[in-house]
Length: 386
Image (cartoon, rainbow, N blue to C red; front, side):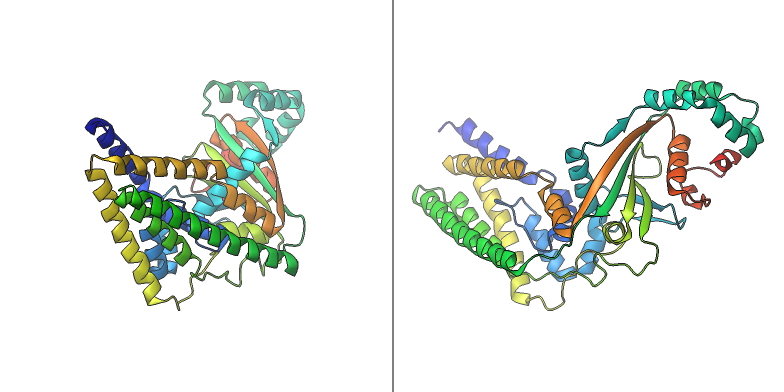
């Protein structure tokens, strides 16, 4: 094997392993929030097992800090006027991505919205003249021309959630799922042992031991106990409908309006979705920590060699990436929505500016309180027109 090819293969495998390593805490928090169980990858990336160790050791503190290691979401409660960071930003991002990719709702462009507004300009002119003197001297077409001339396009995704069925699963289906998981665990163990034996017998010791560690890690992950809090998909709020606007930050160009069932929206945006019981085994935590160190040593050992071991590691990494891409990165969100018994309808609309978008949200909510937008828009007379 040419030394250049062997070195290239080792460094490529190491690069893929290190990809997005700083977001493992964020991804781990999102995954366990949706599935209530650990899901170790086919060949977990560097630092992924370390995230599991921190989860079992720090419990709720880990979940609180994990949302800061990835893209966050700012939530604006349109009904109550307060604002707060999303409590489950990783899980929410996965759910939103799944919904927008599979639910093809109505799409309204800026020009379609402008044409619709022009068609009702007389009625709008009467409403503007009665609500604010600042608008009385301007015609609706002139206002539209001004807005379109200095537009900063804003996109609003309206996500409307409704309960479609009971989330209770019949006992025989639970038993089938348990038997399926047990069969899958046995199959994974045999495959891991088989690959380990082949790799070690062919002299690829680093890759072989790495596959064995992966099999051990996936087996240990099944013994980790996670629970749902009592507030999960439950609400004491008498108001059964919720209206919360979410975006990446105050100056975002894409916003998501969560409408509908208060239990689901509160669980997804406000409340914790999973808790880690305090009685986790110390030996289990130490085992994950030891595997994390061994994985780091094995990866650097393989990458330092200019032999077939690095090529085998690259093939294993590419196989793991292919499996992950085939399964999809939103499968947990899809399964969570189905198990929870909710469905979602979407509408996407483009606006010429933030004021237009915020006004549309205010009209959808139907309330008179505008304090919720204080963090995004300055207090001004033009807000009273809504």
